[in-house]
Length: 275
Image (cartoon, rainbow, N blue to C red; front, side, top):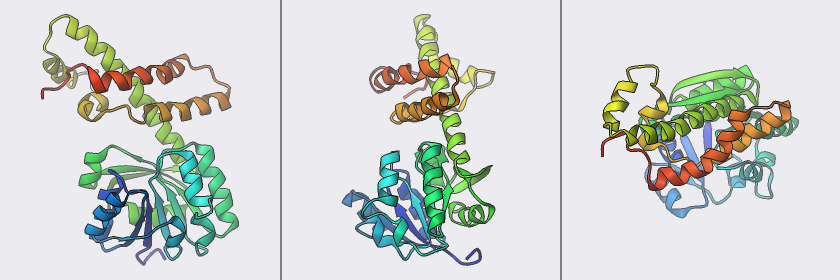
């Protein structure tokens, strides 16, 4: 299988999934997509992909990538009444690119192995513009042979792939990445408010900070930051914190602060960039 192109199924083809499909199709992959939105399905058909009505209809695929939003949705499309896992042939792979709890992917991997299949823990980083350019980052967790097959598929839309360890470690890496993102993004709101009160030109300040220790990806990509998924990310981190029995006051504060930050960013954010 490592030397042949997988027959790929994609479950969830929203704003990020659509360019991923485009890149796979352009690299010669046979891709079939499932989504609850007919509009999304029409877009991927226009790219050359096939579409199906339910996850169970992807049973002839050898490699399934998941791009749905939440843990319960991941469990539903894999294990539910019309789920994919029990329909797959032995040797198939389900790659979980959703951001979910490490425990979720580990439980799925246990069940998949009982049926002769594997889970590739494969959350992705960066954003929609990077997806358009085929420059996403994938954080892999899984067995070496599973990772090798995943690299072939994900290499069509990722410029970087990091293998972090076992199933679950990809989600750990994504959770830590997002924790640091939201810590920094909250700091940018507060720093922006202080700076604005002095009358300084905020975009000029941004340019200066990008040359110094204040530089961050969050500051560089400020216009793309929406905090849409921030609370979910921090809930995952909070669950991990509780399981480890750790007292992390900054992490706890950020979990609460992202609620207001989403409203602030949508309505009256610091103007770090020129429009």
